[in-house]
Length: 274
Image (cartoon, rainbow, N blue to C red; front, side, top):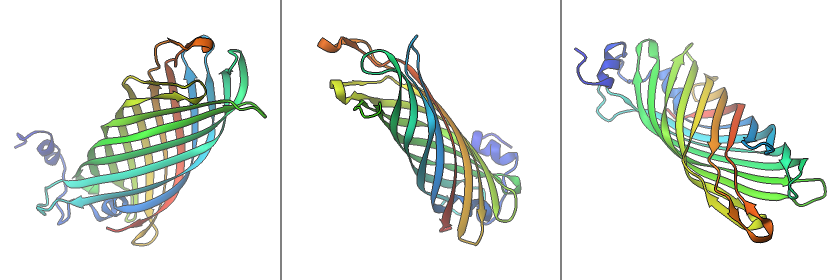
């Protein structure tokens, strides 16, 4: 009878019981070192009557290492241990429209650079038909180097950064002997971050705000250890902004509340060490 909480309840509605908890197809897809190339589209909006807006596509790359391993007990109903470490980098010129230095709306370019690092640790529960349900805690860091320039002019250099903490859920579904589809949903908190504006020696911290992220992926083992994969993601978050402060000749300076939406796609190769 199902009396021992969420884990046993999930076991009762459909856990498989092979010698290894995870199906070999899922275990191979989740246990690999990988590298990928990707494109990301960013949309940034400040919540002001005449605020800044930015949008555009940027190329990038990612590297990752992940594992889905059985627990030491070896019991067929025991959960798997899930770990994952991902780094993403994107850079490029995106369109800027809004305030620029003298307070007048103008068009310019943001020579933007984005970095994102995330680590996950969780448990995988094998279901019927080889599916795997994974629950994980997550933590990480993200940063945006915002360099706004007009042609032949030195512009504004701002650096946004934040820590990440939270968790998520992932479902792996084997579609064929070598092919796995996956879906991931995360809810993270952005904390411990802030903005630094080098041009006016301005630096202040942000409050805690949420970040939502959804990912879909496909992984295919071309050979037992060589994999190809493709994916797409959508992400949304807010920067809380800062209170106005007086800075002499610069007047009152503050960072407004803003909304950022990002979506992208990637394709890459991996080596499974399962």
